Image (cartoon, rainbow, N blue to C red; front, side, top):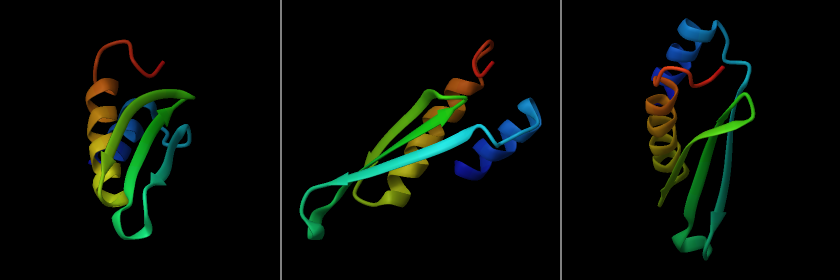
Length: 75
């Protein structure tokens, strides 16, 4: 979903420059839990959690894409 999100932002807003993806992890090193948050123009549009950073990123990007596809979002 990350690539789809980038493609959507490039098509709709003509930029991906305002996209920011933040991540953090909690738990012991052998069992980290990742949280990833997707921001566009300083607004949160997606949040995902998972056992790996990649999984959490995909979930967050999926939610962000769904949210930004709604009329009026992202402006």
